[in-house]
Image 1 (tube, rainbow, N blue to C red):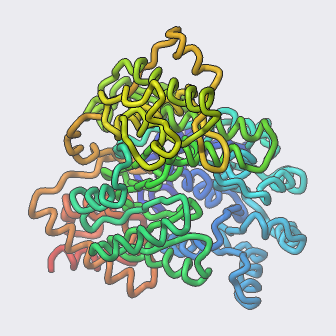
Image 2: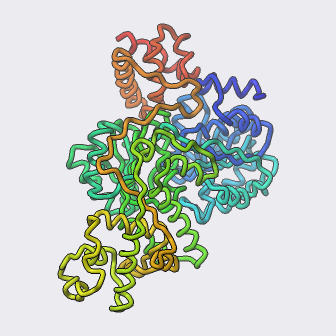
Image 3: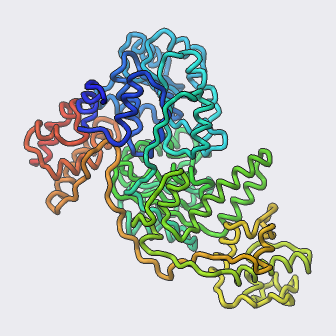
Length: 609
């Protein structure tokens, strides 16, 4: 049974009537002084798991976060709730830092945010020695995993928390980790005795869709124009050059977009991030350097124009959509060149053989997700060791089931072509040359190397070029073909012989000819909200837009992101209820005491204007 003070903080400070999922058990465990390792999906309410214990326990909760650029926003959001919060990082001038230190020593801070780099500084450690610490919260704890997707070396030093402050409870939190990563986190952070809490990884409001890459820019533009007009979203690209090109392309086509990558000036990056957080309807085109810790709840889509390196990375990045529980889209365009490029990157990567094998295993799992004919959500959940329904009804393979076909003969033809090039001519080429040979094309290169004299020339006319590229892609995904060298030439694998000897059947995925446009994702609620967000009638929709206009003005006046005032889900509940008094307004999820006092009367006036 959770303590009365925890419920009091949940209701009075955060405005929620009930905990969600395992939040209640986690909060009680930490309040009682226990260590915890928490896996909870983005938008699942991880922050409450340490914020509430920090407010209940005596002292200040110290939050280790890798996100210096976002600490100000995190602190502003807490202050709006009436929580006494501060941060220490390298962006502060000496006077600001001195004031924060004084507040901490005086016991006048509920939460103090520090970066892992800052915690390693002896002066910061001595400061913490002099104050009273309620708990340590290690956010984005997967950063400690050395073969993970967001490794941060400074996280390796955080085992010192237990050594230096053995009586202070620690809670490590992450949105994504396999069982192996969980064990690595526990080992490296000295959390062997911690209690593990693993919430469901399912994000039912997110619709997962993976499409064959044809004209990716145009495919992306079609997605935004037909399904996400005026929506905020993130587009991930592999390279800085791609980020710039895609951002320019979207702007030229009337979609407000900003670039974000490590090559930009730090001030430009900070300004673009700030605009994305504070303005409605912006699209951020970015490398994966962007997004960790972004607490923008109304991101309606995450699009990938390049193949992610791992399922963990894909899940983490797509999880930035729909934190408010509203319908959202995770869309990925995936093609043959992605597979070739990723295999090449692994082959030429730094590290020993074990490291490259680990990278290859991560990629294999990602390719399996792309090529599956089964429910994508079920496969995603299975990767993290959780059961799922055979059909979720909200991914492309469920909405428009692809066909599975026997591709053994085409596989044999393709592998024979690669074999003959190597054996008869001592040559290795990329996928394009093998496909041209199979299709019987007399290109300049085919003629130059007399490949039209090979016995396999023209034997593949039953498939179109795009279909042959799919065959190559799926053979690479299944380990029946490999790429090597700087130019990504095709080579056979040990398993290729089984197909050539007719000892192994090769089943492949065939995309629907004209996939039906997917309906909007089904509605679900995440976070600490207990009631589903209501659908609005036309009159309610008008009220909601009026409330959004009021919120935008209030956010601009206060210099904070709009969601810091109220989430869309809260405004929709207000629009549906249309309260006539502050007492009625206080019953809405997300309306705590401080926000009621600060914004309540303005909301009531907006409802009657």
